[in-house]
Image (cartoon, rainbow, N blue to C red; front, side, top):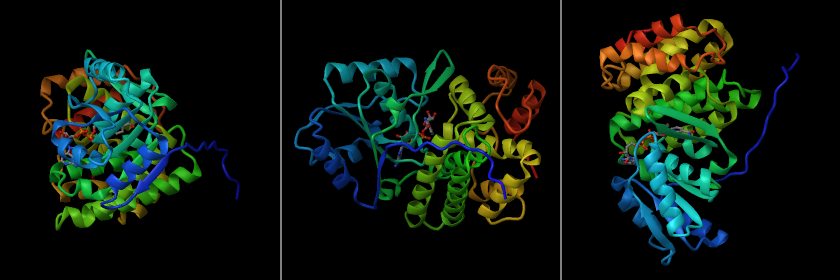
Length: 354
Ligand code: NAD
């Protein structure tokens, strides 16, 4: 059998995974790397967690930045950079979801400071060298090795009290990284194996989550680690481009947007990638990937339409315009303005793709 040509690059990142071990791992990183002026980035709701995790850092925390805003508006990036510069920070410790990690990345992008990331959702940003900053409703994204955290500390106990709706949508955000990794521009044989395992862990966790989040969150967070890893490798395609454009333009929940858009993109692409559809169905443990994904979303009670996320109907043509700005999009099936109109209308109404 011939192996199709591929490129694989590994990234230097120190990952530690362990329930109830975050404080110990953070302390170890700070001691080993002799960080002495730490800027903690966290949302207000995660501040108590941040204080607990940094209690043993013997006064090395010089500032806390808590004004985190989803999709990292340019003004927020500027404010966070100013604090880092004024306090002469030598490490950015981000403790929170993708918005918090994104704010830390905005600092690192210009200040070239190292990031230690402690994720508290399943977004997966901590494993990637992708940054995103929103200016006037347009989310600009880019890649820069400087924003890849030097180390990531996963502690599932920090997610035990994640609100159920966010746990579900965040898990589908991670699932989207895995699904798109099958056809992303950097897809390679290894990324497909990791993506399939990520889907398996996330789907199993989501199916049993109703009984108790703490009982399945270890599995979900392990799945989100694989998802972030594989997203960094395979890169983003049609699905992520739609979600970034919509999130920046309409300030929609990032995780919710991924949940709503993913089955519609999979339905659109599945006929063009039959092997991927089969691999995905196997990982989901179903006969048909599109049906199985939609059934899983329905079973978890997650939002199914952009209208449920709060997007007004008259914004639909604007949504088509902002996504169409990204054409041509590297995708296994050609994407035209017409196909975007259909896909986004289906996502807006939460059309059952089965
Ligand atoms: P988020 O970080 O905005 O968090 C959502 C809410 O949940 C916030 O109010 C936060 O305070 C709260 N929260 C976080 N952790 C919690 C916990 N453990 N318990 C209770 N509440 C908690 O949402 P998100 O979905 O994690 O991140 C979305 C952002 O991440 C978007 O801006 C998106 O573009 C970015 N992102 C980037 C990448 C990348 O590779 N660059 C990947 C994924 C997501």
